[in-house]
Length: 273
Image 1 (cartoon, helix red, strand yellow):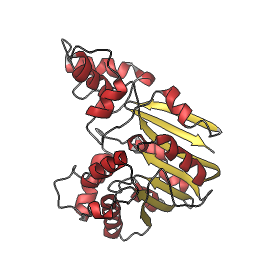
Image 2 (image 1 turned 120 degrees about the vertical axis):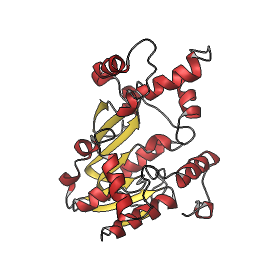
Image 3 (image 1 turned 90 degrees about the vertical axis):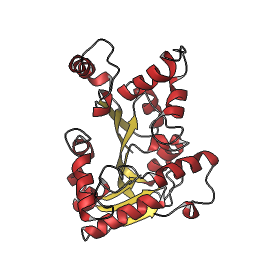
């Protein structure tokens, strides 16, 4: 795996921390016990990601086959599990990531299946692509990790063609993981009014300074787009290990699911330029 020598020279100190975390921990790379970079390894990662207890709802959101023949950019490719679906669907696909580790994983994944596509190291806050290049920009659970998400959204807008679409997932403010962070780092610390943004930025299980958004905040991020549709996706992370107090696991899970469209870890956004 490539290391700090491949770090872009002009990263802010905040972004360096994000880079270092994800370069050591490409998203999803630890889910399989099979030897990395093998077909068996990538097959297992795909089965896990889209399995019943993970993120099978991505298929309905992304609509991979719909973009056959279209120019698609994925920002934040991780180990390439979603990206390879764009390639298999016949899209003119380009994938990019801040880290060389993700680029390496994805290139090797494509090689395993005899596929080819453009895979580049890029900073989502200053993309190298010309204006109006892509029909679709897709980014699932990535933009909330960059220090200045608004810059990333503006870049997405810039590289989209007129009439193009952005499909973005951001972490939602009103969700199981955020509730657990508040329980552990505010309520149990006798500081219930502590800023939840500060708590998530400091104690989340991923890179430092991760952000969370309400629907209103997300709409503000995408205000330059002509149309924005969003919905809340309930995920396994919303009810797994939820503090149960006197409730049984079954009752707790039923309560969480009953909150419906108002509660869930994933904020699913489709925006048109």
